[in-house]
Image (cartoon, rainbow, N blue to C red; front, side, top):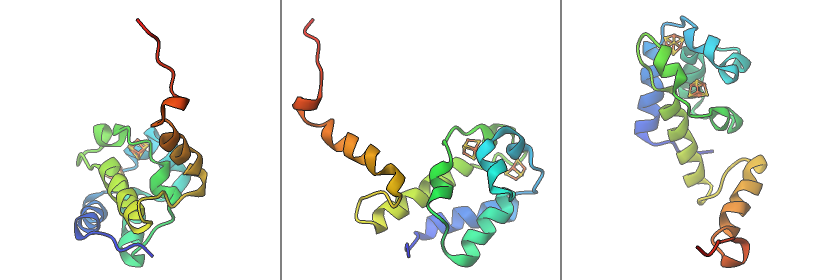
Amino acid sequence: MTNYRKSTVDQAKFIAETCSSCRRCMRQCVFLQQQGQTPAQLFEDFVEKGDIAPLVPYSCQLCHQCTVVCPHHLELADAFLAIRQDMVQANHGHTPLKQMKGVELHQLLSRFALFCYTKKG
Ligand code: SF4
Ligand code: SF4
């Protein structure tokens, strides 16, 4: 289980307590619609349980559209990103999602000249 930073938990608590469940953000975001919970419920669950399924924070596209429409300008993307960062830290620098292993490998290999293409100008 991930040990989340105090700042991450505080961020989640702030959203849980401030979100008025108006669902404006949910009308803009397929990911939030699929959760079937308002951000208030989603982050309250995270705070109460002390954890969340990795697929949830990893499904946020970090586009900030929710913040644009939110009457409280809540930063859901920042909160999901903080949760992801804590998960990676707890997993010794690796993604906790097996679906992301391919991306991790791609990033690793792209550091080597063998896998890079440079066009001489
Ligand atoms: S930042 Fe995440 S939660 Fe907000 S609209 Fe984009 S995908 Fe949805
Ligand atoms: S728009 Fe803001 S207040 Fe409304 S449900 Fe989304 S996060 Fe909560």
